[in-house]
Amino acid sequence: MKNAPDVLLKEANTSDRETGLWIAVKVTDRNGKVISRQRRRRSRSFVQGWNWAVCAQFLGQSTPSPALGPVKNTAGSNVNLRTCGSPFRCNAGAGVTSTGIRVGTDNTPVAITDHALKTPIAQGTAPGQMEHQAQTFTWLGVAGNVCSFQTERVIVNNSGAQINVREAAIYMLVFYPTAGTEICACRDVISQDVPDGGSVTVTYTIRIVA
Amino acid sequence: MKLYYEVIVTDRHGKVILREKRNSRSWLVAYNQLVYGGMSGSGQSVKCTDGVNRTQSTTYDLLLVTRPAGYDDRGCVVGSGTAPVSIGDYRLDAQVLHGAGPGQLQHYECTIIYPPSVAGSQCSFRVKRIFHNASGGPVTVREIGVYGSISNAYDACIIRDVLGAGAPIPHGGAITVIYTVRAIA
Image (cartoon, rainbow over all chains, first blue to last red; front, side):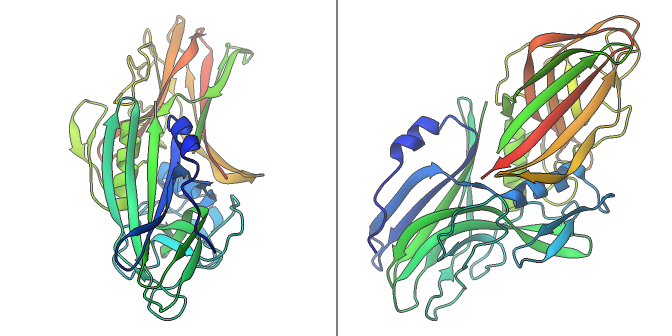
């Protein structure tokens, strides 16, 4: 399938004045040449997990009463949340897939109740797998009435064949009463084909506008 | 993520005399810094409500907003200032403090109305606080906001709004401030 062209630039420019979440995607070949780019556009959305995590922090209780839940973690299990000792944490290291930016192969439209990627791509070099690099963060600061930061992850395809990436998400750490678990903060449907030896770079920008 | 506010002013008999419901003007820099610090694990230097920059916690006590009655240093807060919202605001322009003295309002508990509810493509929860006027005279609220913790000892202003019109609260009356935090898919 042909990769998506540069699209939605106009939309990005016109809605840059809004508070929200943004996504950009770049695909390179084995030589590092950019072969496809989805310019920054508004992310389809934070999903309910993000709001649950913010709510848990605002509430700030280690044993909320009534319970703060149930909400599904990325494994699909119902958990009750509490204030987190690693709030929103998604600074995944190389090879880590429990948190951080993830990609998948399913293009089912985003729903507010999404709790995970529909078909996540596993870590590795076997067929259908990709190698996850460490997630990075960049504080962009304040410009005029806009304040933003970015988080980015490079995911490399050394599987021996092309992988068609169709979804992206951020998994982050939350606490439930007895331990940590992971929750899906946002999900987007994208369309990028990553050749063997190439990579996909997903960049999310969180922006507030006064 | 969308943010809305609603203010409801009642007289001493509980009759609603003013209601305003709008899109919130803004989250502020401190909010984004606290989220960034949490996500990355790298603590940011955040300007607290006393104007001093301090390094945020990246573990516990981050973005705590609930607060018992009687405290005006965290949770929903109100003020009488009218300075336009700037993204770098670190406190209200002129905060109304807790108490029953002239120009003061009694701060009730700041609560979170949870769990987040899903309706259609939206997921929402609310932050609520009531302020009662026992000052003996009217108190006019012109600005509202939310102070959240950056650590176990300090707070920063994470939301601020200037009301469309001043909300005069008669003696014996009250103002209820409700923020709705909403994710929309």
